[in-house]
Length: 171
Image (tube, rainbow, N blue to C red; front, side):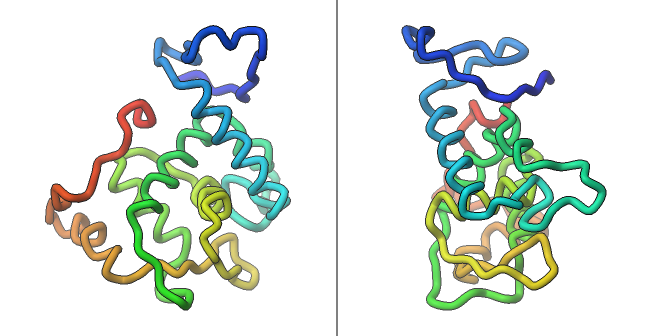
């Protein structure tokens, strides 16, 4: 799969969709909005990168990596998953963003970076708490919201009331 930084050409706005890679048609308006939301998250957390909140130890990841097409699609999957959650008043310290990103991966059957997940948290204005010397953070997600997603790990299918990820984000 070819990955590249999303560049939007204002003159080419006649079409709602544009072929970005391998024949997959993606809604440019949706990607453009998502890209702006990721840029906003990067202003809130300037060191945010695919690893998470801290700079990559080996320098392999940069903040701009979150603006690549695959990262934007990961961000959108995370936003979809976060919209299914209910929230509590205090941060749940049993699980971190890294745990949640794995639940998103299992739900979508698609890789998601910790940084894309945290960018979706920030853009969705979900309160979070940074963990000292960690790339992850704590969230206020209700344990009851998580139960069906953890049950999948034990072979229990998701209830039909829980929507599947948007198909175009899985390609």
